[in-house]
Image 1 (cartoon, rainbow, N blue to C red):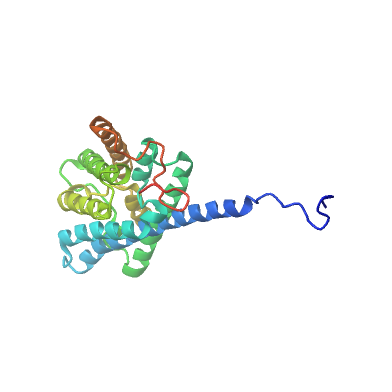
Image 2: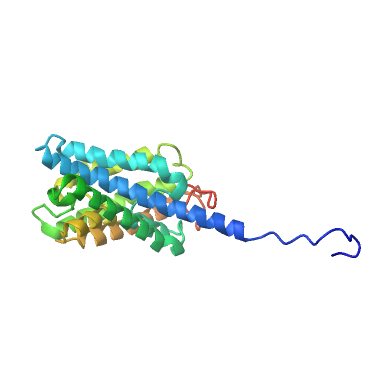
Length: 264
């Protein structure tokens, strides 16, 4: 008790515990958003493949491609403000390499994304049965695994260039980001889906592969997208720097939340 103010007590220092809880809550919501978004991607996209098989081609390849593009668009609108809406381990890795996402959260995002993909595949197996290998991606072109590897790397590279433009360049930021990314996924699935599956996403491939037990050439769908995404991020950074300063500063986190205020 103070001698000058006998009826007063020292004011305690501002506690850090509530702020720590808030940060934990924000990060947990980001992980949950990544898991839910990836779940929706696999459930809708691979579910469309399975439904097409069950209905003897009613949905068609065009329909399946549209489903993948549309579900990505919708999930970006739903969760971009919480987690950045990566839904893809290759995209998260590329953002880390490009210094737009913290390395310390890489593993958490990967776990959330893979968990969402696996749970979606489990639900599809329970609801629709063992159909079409649960939508597992497989090399189907005449060039085999290496042809599919090259396609997956190139497809993901172009996808990542679009994502980098939407996520890190102030000239391209806007509500059209989800449409641009979803359209890229849908268009690439349209022309490359019958050859390589057009995964562009290790989680999308590994979830159904794990539950269906189909491991043929799955390295293609891990290494191809990873290399392609990193290449796309590096290429866009070079192009952006060559064209002038108009980007979100390097080192800014792409997590758009109460804790991180930058877009994506």
